[in-house]
Length: 109
Image (cartoon, rainbow, N blue to C red):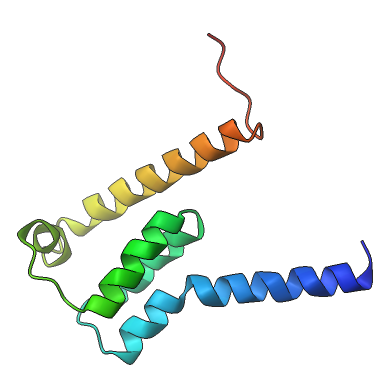
């Protein structure tokens, strides 16, 4: 790999990370009431563009009064379950994507 390619890769990686954590930056700049939770979930969005879009909408839209979301977000006892479900969904989506790209071995039929 040439020096130019390594520099381009480094700049691309830094840019991707900055863009990935944009929802967190917006949430903190707007003083979102759930900015800390949003920041923790934002770590998983490295693996899922759909999660990133949802977090961006949440950060820009502010706090929601949706009963289903509030059941998990405002109930500290339910937060581990919320994080666990997110991890399973993102991990499953990533595994499916890698399998379809031929990066992971497929299960025998």
